[in-house]
Amino acid sequence: MFNDFYTGKKILVTGHTGFKGSWLCTWLLNLGAEVTGYSIDVPSEPSLFEDLRLSEKITDIRGDVRDLNNLKNALADQNPDLIFHLAAQPIVRRSYDDPVETFTTNAIGSMNILEAVRESDSVKSMVMITSDKAYRNVEWIWGYKEDDLLGGEDPYSSSKGCAELIFYSYVNSYFKNNEKLSKLTTARAGNVIGGGDWAKDRIVPDIVRSFSKDNTLSIRAPNATRPWQHVLEPLSGYLTLAMMQVSRTDLNHESFNFGPRDDVNQNVLRLVEEFSKYWDSGSWEVNEDNTKPEAGLLKLNCDKAHAMLDWKAILSFEETINFTGEWYKAYFKDQVDLYEFSVKQISDYSQKAKEKGLKWAE
Image (cartoon, one colour):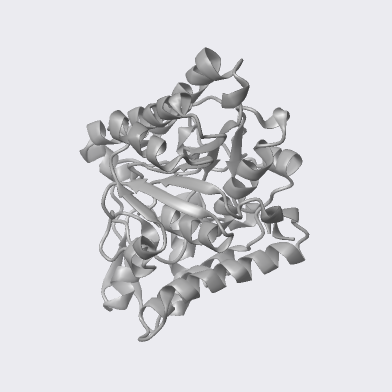
């Protein structure tokens, strides 16, 4: 898998205690990488990071990406070959309540990792993860391409657009004519779901909390359409990009979208209805809340990733919900090793990718 590229590599993952970070660390461990994580404390209770016992398996550094000196020291101590930058304040609704935390973490934190990499002697490659929300969303029916206008009306979306602009500035100011700093890219993914997400104000964790306690789920925006994708889909893209960019100059400083198949773009109500099949009981009601507005329609065009990386999403909407629902069912069972269960899901997903002919899975 991934041509054994990650075997023995020293990898730093920022935001490793989060939902996507925990899944990425798990995958990297099973690819034979030496993984270091840099993050503030676990962001939720329960915590996927703790359920997978990752602190026992990786070098676990607690630090804030807003602390530049601490970040520089971590890179100097660990000497990573490659960085995946995921650390972020990731919730749109929370960004309305605390815009300062959102902008400083997502924008200044991204600047700090770029600055730390600029001064590092060890880092050979980095993928900086931003978001599909970085685009100026005019709610058109076709997917956004990587060269479409960046922007964002809410603080979260704007902070991710800022991170992309900071990356662009660093590329043109410091990286463009420096071969050592040429293997840096940004990745933009859509709404990610999967087992182990417990964040507040995200629809799947809200469903699980409500249905598991036989409470009625309150739905804020039933008709909002999102590019739902299982967490392993964009992670396979990040891993493919990081591997390929090391040896290909045409990928230097590029940006890539990683989104789901077109048929996976469904509204919130359809997601709830499909997810309810995994519970013995589950009811919901619509309580539309426009006090903290979010996008109604957002799609990504991933033609560039398909053409340049030979990457594509493989899961149908039903398969995406199945992977997610089965993980949460396992969570509520006694004596299930969630780390081994998660590794099995990575293996199952990789096998599906291999059957679809994706080269990274061979």
